[in-house]
Length: 396
Image (cartoon, rainbow, N blue to C red; front, top):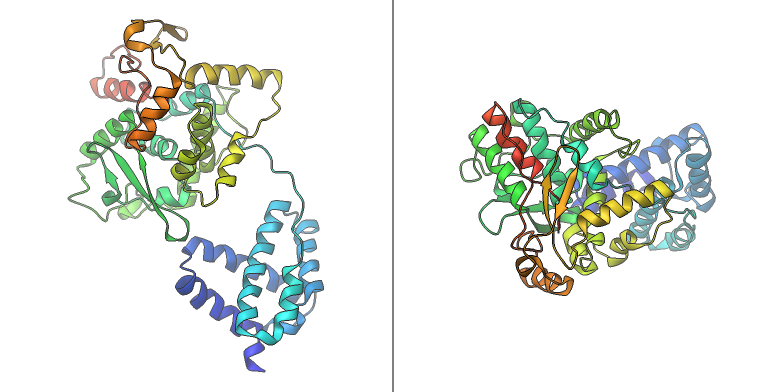
């Protein structure tokens, strides 16, 4: 029967059902498509099927199980990747179950294929020292270096996925108080995240230098390549890995492998370590299920070196009951107590204030808190940018 051809059902699924009825993003549809490309390769090369005339009846439970084992053993895919492929297949057979009810038993059998058991590794994230080291790498004496510094800063401050960062348009940026950026996430979901004061200053300088404003060019991408086309995901990944490799040469705190998603993990971990409510972090990251957010709060077994770095992180990022003012010295950042009447604020009051403002802006704990001061240099332009990126204390 023509309607039972795998080719026809798959074409309708990818071109009509997913984009129109499920309203999935093009990136998600491409991920589903790649799964079925691998399945077709397996059916042709390993099973010896004629994929041009592949009937649905040949895609039984054993065939799908053999496909998953082929991914794991021959292609050396990780368990999480195999589970992702299996999830895409389950979704397809859920669709087939409705379109062709006579195949319901076959679809249920495939849907009952269990996921691979795998222990998720702890999320990689950057300590404050590592983050400062990486942000110091871009050459702020050049336009490209300044643009890359803004990109890395926005990537961290918004905790955006790489596709969300690439899709930011000028109309999505609001620098007036309360400053925020609108992100277009998975499944067409939209969320607005606040911007720190230092990020706003970097963006303002970036707009002025390039002669752009959200009002003049609302549809222009925030970060572009040649011919003002938006940066691709691979282009953003290249920029991140380029500066990460340079930072690894001067710091042992930088992980061996860094992707743009590490910046998202970093922001999430810094919020958790600052005792921000998990509900707020969930909305900030755009998670549909709070259990996804709770992964960042799970305790981790730390080595002696990692525990020492963690203590440094806590000292820098977690608001203490007595707030301190940071200043730069020749060797390291040192803290000195300031007027206790101005600087003392309890953690409870800080969280209440943050809740009341609904993340309208990232605020420091104390109104008496000042950023890092940097000595001026002979180059005024460079001095301005140095002051702005050095003032990114990443405090909550």
